[in-house]
Length: 116
Image (cartoon, rainbow, N blue to C red; front, side):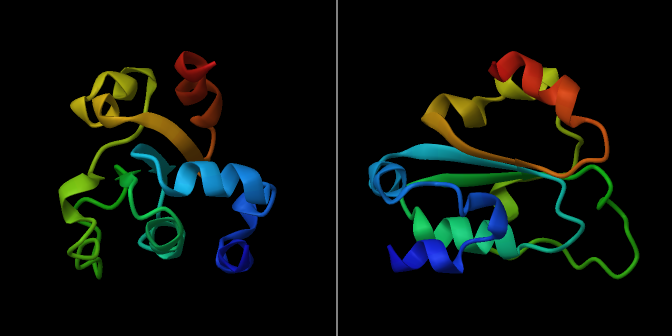
């Protein structure tokens, strides 16, 4: 699929079949740690339009120079760090979590435990 060539490197390992299966399903995509760069979220939104993208980044609240997430992402941008309790949020009731991207300097182990 051409769309896979545009996705961030983290998703290049998805096979065409997996991408096609997710593309039409209602699902949740979780991005942990953005540092104000929303290229991953934009790529996911383009590749999987039926899915909802949720971004967690507790380091962005009040950060000088950060004007906020893109308007389309604002309702699902969480100004909090992702942790084991995050999976209990209503956001995760809307579908299967299809993709998780974590770049949070050490929170990965703790945050991923409830998902395995």
